Length: 298
Length: 297
Picture 1 (cartoon, each protein chain N blue to C red):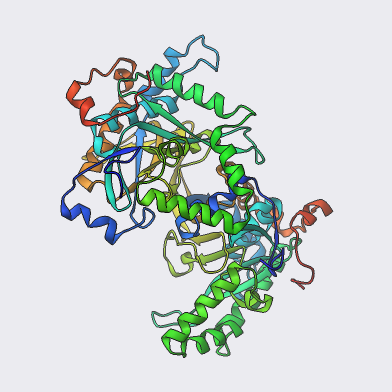
Picture 2: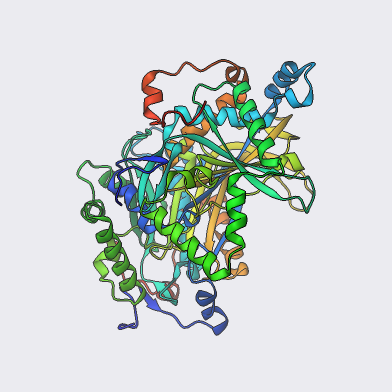
């Protein structure tokens, strides 16, 4: 490692007990934890119905925006979920970015692409929705993103050359020699990858983590449905609209207690979505703890 | 392989159909089966409430201890659960050991440590509770255990030094040349790894298996709650105290039929736990079949 920090992250010191995990489980895919959470969204649906009244479909705020906005707040309040492992070292990511799947056409043949959207810790849900809509439009456009053009060029090369380039990319990445502009374009380098399977009527899957890049979290969102819920004390049944979220998490970056408390923070925002319409009141210390790079988000 | 047997296991002869598995699926993480079940723990709760009446929290027997004892009995009665793959060969583990995580403090910053506890096949619920409690209090002590000190030393090396050490460790392990004392202290060399997520109010997760070490079973335990149970024939629901579990299993060491019967054995002990209070009375043949070398008194 020539440089201490990466273009996308600041090196962090971790206890030996945590550091050893990157050697016992060197890859992300062999360090995956799979966890499903069922969220009750009655409150969220009522609130969104009220907020969207009289708006055109393009201007509406959706459940998907709400999930992303709730997760942005979770990341700010629980900064360890924005860390990652690269080259056996731990880094605090210097941006809050989510990669979203966008299909150019809603058909079997439609090309699927990933778009990376960056957020500010002070974003309200309206700002989150605006950033997502803008990025998805670019992702769906025929011009394609610069990352797509790079992929097209690379895949047009003869196979041994492609393999060589991919190998070199990994070597540079592991040894922290990768130029920042290449990371910036690549959606596999993000806080979380989010796939909204509910939008195509699928009820969620456990998605693998990518060894490529450094995303430590994948969220697959299921469809909205009405199901029986049982009170955990009395087992009384009631029916409510819910949504399942399938999390795949990197076991090396945080322990069960930290993940559990982070999930509680996320659930709190999903259960009280009105908070997301207000600008958050984070202290300077909270923002500093995120170690964000200046100028990543306008 | 210089030696036939390993310090932690005895070489097993297996059919070719099974022997080929570690060549088709060389790593544990590409051989995982994910299984889930719901346990009716009404009887266990009733039994524990009666047993723990008037006792201090430190003396109480918990549901976690019941699950450990049920698992111990299941492994003794279904010995294939205590086999493992190392260096693309099959071995029968010569100890009964479970590893689990203990946090020194139950907070975000609390340091986490993994501990390995060895059991005797004839242990009762009380023996399991005693051994577990002793190990936890030792691991939580500020002085730290020997594994932690070893990790600190290795992790202080530069990255190429750590990589060289880890490569050598894996090489020695694969070729059965790793000294017994190194395996002995490593918690990833155990019968089953258990994570009690219910203790922090979580539902269970599907956990990866570690390629490091030899552990072929990972058990994640969820929280205690009241919930519905459905009769498999009539579909009629009834409510009960339940606990969801998720188990990650190494597909190479046993087939679905064997795992299915093993899970049924485990479930039977958890759902009807009174027999865990008494010594199990295993025959000499049953104990010999385990091939144990280390049995704590």
